Image (cartoon, rainbow over all chains, first blue to last red; front, side, top):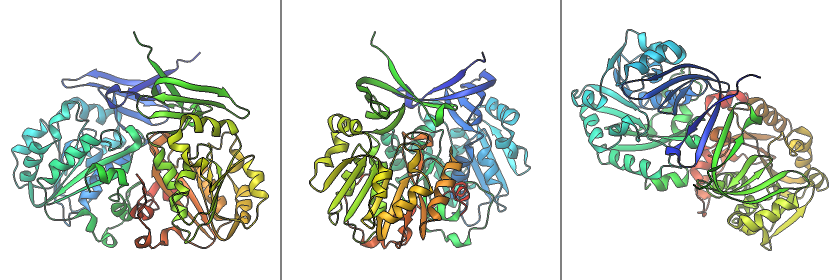
Length: 280
Length: 280
């Protein structure tokens, strides 16, 4: 009989829901300097990156997250030239960012070199743009990197793991103040900000922290099958441009699987319980 | 040590993903005439109705499904008086339908009396409107019921289990023809039509079947945490009114947790891969 192997992901810090994936093969398992990393090949979602037991990205559904975290800010800013991704060592956000011809430089600041190396080797569909000449990969602490750069980036994307992890410092007011300073005068910031259904307090705090710093603060949603609850929030903080006021008739055609100009507007329309979470 | 009990739901006919819920207590387990039924109390989602191993509805997230399957058609029709629900033995759709003052009669046609009885006893938050004088509960086969009624209902809602179950006959052209006949001359039909991410062929077929019969056919989406992929499709077939052309400024305030007039429009804006599934 063939081995029947399942990966069980204990979601929400193990508090009562778990997602299981049938696994064909474990391609890599390594304790890095920062986290327990694995790359597995699953029946339904193909290859997956797993950090500290949590599914980060999969071949089959990564397009939703990477398109939405990238194209919303980059199609809100009229001329994004320099972009920073904090985290995002898989390279998926970089791949989407470099679809924008205006972008001259995209810096990836990832703390864990092993994640970048593993994704280059095992997830080339996602990491393919990391060797692009417009991309610079910097291995280091995102908090320190952002603090050391002022008035430099048109867009900053925080593509982090969950706040109950090494990414804790990437959620909240102190970091957002440094991001504000690292942005140019009309810069835009976006971060993945967890599930309003299961973690309303986290979403509320993060949104409120961003709102205290940025003149324009908006929450948008995307449907991501492998994330808890399947419905994920992203927070945009902007110095000037309102992502909900973009003239979508001017957005050019782009090779995407989730994002469309119409989705650019619709993703900011929130179900009533999520409006209530962020007090809108 | 306390018993650590988890319900493992094999999603998508057991093909490689499963969702597990920590269970406090099994309140009911019964083999009915039609299916294996259970009511359990879970840590995260509260009480749940499970049929043939598939989670049908839960106290914590039922509002999304029941609001969206009901308010979209009922706020599209300008004056819905008589409404039929096929399936939906938990009573959640009936509860939402009866929030509309124009509704004079809502018929629930459920094949499995045991489901209605169990939901009345264990899920009163959902089934509460089944005893309303405007509601008639009819225990019987939905296909037969629809065939025997002509030009009678302003809205018909198909609130069924999955097509790989006793509900198979509730998906597809033959049934939709009978629904067309059972509707009044400006009637509207809506059905839950599964997950475009995991079951694109099912969604494509059902949508195409509806489109062959109804002058106006549209797909809308809602984010439901306990359904596979978390992002569920509903198909609207309408003889006259276009649900995307509703004047949402005229929609009155209603006690909801997901639905808003703005969501009424935004839920029809589809991610690119879903547009492609239905050929739009």
